[in-house]
Image (cartoon, rainbow, N blue to C red):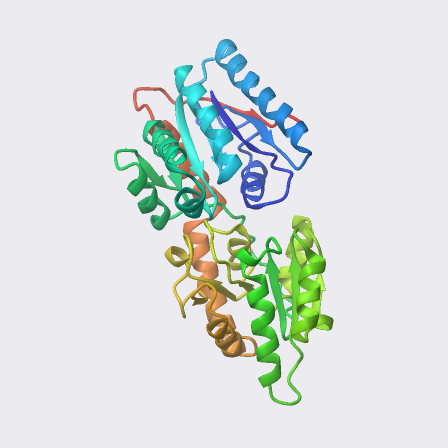
Length: 371
């Protein structure tokens, strides 16, 4: 039995999106006998702090009771930074004490900043201690694997990219000049850089060119972004959707001329993978695991984080260049299908679980997510 623990798959955010893909692919349902029995325990959701405190205590109890009642072989936690890491590190410590093998699955793009700038000596020691004593660390890319090995050189680190569903024939009805941003409306995601770059590009477009339109979907401070766009002179060209459902997301991807995510920090962003799967040409920044998947000029355009001039130049190069859009989108779609398709990632995950103890026979499992 495998006990998987993390945020609510029905919530907002990148980890929830990843878990939702796993759930839709059947990881938490009755499965083939050659697969695994996975029980999912929610440790966090969008709720007041006191409710999340109770939820975390409940998760601790669920781990202890599951160990008593069933032969748990693996405890697999999904973690980001800050509070997420601290909560999951305690669960991993407890699981080791209960005799379970442990998997630490790192998602958060801000993990290096968290370790090096937000923690003191004791906190950094606890990070190294946690990573050094888990059975397996799962990283989203080679760059994240290499960073984890600088913290815990002796630990076993394997690469497992985020999964994405691949539709056979995505429907595209792109609207000229329509630029889509999916993510939290936060300066660290580069959305303010994007507003600034679009305002600069708009002023340089030839007369008669379609007006650029920025569509942003995600949680965060929408009014502050709108005020910033007003000051930049493109307030009426900004469309704020808030957090949208997967169906609405697919509709927006179908209408988008470009997808742009100029983040300052990332793991391997689900929104980028979804855009690549939907054949939307992308402009992204060279952070986290992005350069391991996206080659500049082949699968998309890649710019340095925080470089507004380079971002503007990439917009000018791509926004109305339909042959280049098609070439990049086709190559991206092929790359994502060969690296991150759900079936490929699921198979890799099953193999990694099984490798934690080759002497074990295949573990038959179904799984469920508590409501």
